[in-house]
Length: 346
Image 1 (cartoon, rainbow, N blue to C red):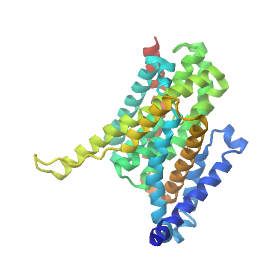
Image 2 (image 1 turned 135 degrees about the horizontal axis):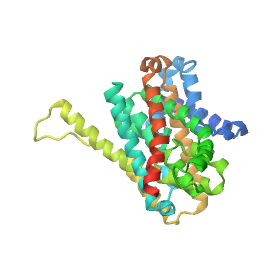
Image 3 (image 1 turned 180 degrees about the horizontal axis):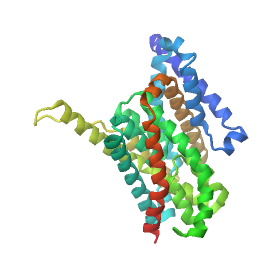
């Protein structure tokens, strides 16, 4: 027991400390007004320490940091279910759910074609950037990374694309709303633009920031559309795990009678179950609030740990192609997302 504490506690405490500082800083008005949330702050602080002070203490903290990056992340995804209910789908209707599904699949498919066929990027980086852009930003990247068993710098590169282009969307979308009033590219109502925003902007916080200037109706609709998109993370992870297992089987040339093991991301299944439990409204509201706060803490610790494991030299080696890919996906989310919204909503 003492050995476990000695091996794991220092890294966990370090991740916790960064997470707590991030929670405090996230309350600063300027950061809130720019939708720079706890998770973003945590990874920035983690990267800073990871490239300055952390290497000198890494030998003592590595196991605890890895535990935070993997296990606490999975718990964070599970607790994320308390933010959602199945009723969210009914609020945006079948057309809203269809738009989310089409945006997700088309964006991820574009990421694969451009990333692998054009830029020749490694598979893990392409999948992580595609997941972050098409589903729910950094949370999707972090949830996808353990399924792929990728490297920390691959996830950090993907998260950085979410941060850069998600920030751009917060500034651009209010202008897009005004332009659409003149162009009538798709319905001009606040609800319609809310669905467009929720189905195409990366992070939940960024969705709120992008829609807030347009009023409460647009903001509420955007958040609900975004939550429906977030719920698609679970089936995405399960399908991804099946594809990973099939790829591994073909790579090792196993015999026809032998099957490669399929790693089912049970945390994604439990995530859906928790959302279902939350939909029943049987959990006291104070416990739901506590669960959401715990979820934020766990995800912040995971992001901090990711940052600690990220080295600038590795990101530099990745080159400019991942960022260009993120920019192409960002452009598709706006242009292709608007086209999908128009086709579905009529």
